[in-house]
Length: 461
Image (cartoon, rainbow, N blue to C red):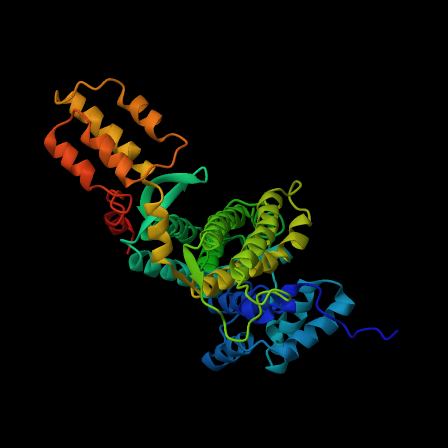
């Protein structure tokens, strides 16, 4: 039997690669190494610009050349790092040697010893992870998430006044509007988005155990904490002054927990839309050439929402694990975080894939007003709530002496299907004021939606 050539194990790198490829720029081994080179180069430039540890300022051309090389990190550097790491068996050391080699190439060998000076590997790694995760969230995950919110908000507005039967416990309940129900999800997701935007991307840069010991041994007259803060914040990150060898990863746990919460809300959305499709509230728009079933040609399956559910669950399996694992490190350092963090891209990849499916799924459905109207017209008993509430108000106002109106309506409606005629007969026989009676007689399931349409005005814009 002929063996297959090497194949990707993860579907994110195979079947679904196109949908998540943007994440590879940041949350891949190459993306991490590009960030490592960036941090190493910026630290070298910072030391020379401030004449620290014997460094002297580079020329403008030399600084520009180094930064351009770091920003153009590509296949040549990827291959060179792989070759070097086969010898060093250490990824960050391989990056250090790569930078040293570039300095030699630029006739800057005199500065070689400033490469990675006063750094533990985790000084480089924690900043690199913070940079890559921040970029992945802001440039890939968040725009896709924003698109889902925007489409939901558009449909919520489109269906703002379209009446719909509610279902509590799966049973007919006080009507609402389809737009208001979609707006609930918009509101929930927007709230989470604000919390994600508030996450700090923390970085430390303080040496082997977070004490600046080597720094002070080399130069006791420099305020190394101030240097660290300025350097970290200069990279666009927030500074963490109190750490062990590692940055404590609490910000990562907070971010991943919040993204997992978003995933759970989206899972709720996917199951609700799937259920609305199953009872005909939404029609699916057939995609030309697509097959719904291999044996039943009539079917149009809600696969986008089913795929989203699965990928949201997979994403949370990774993100929940990361959030739980990364907050613990034995004493000043262990390597559990190192292996765990290599899967950050997997967690975000499944979330991005789910967002992609939800967005496409939302674009392939239309509300079915006639189905919603028929369902409302078949459930006049839901007006029992309105009738008994009006009776209570009339009794309180002294315009009725009916005792226990809830029991009267329960006797009429509980577990029974009644029609418009039954309710009209019941209301006409009530001892209540004329105005109240007129309001009840004019009421239908389709108009008994309260201020559902107006509630959309509370959405944040």
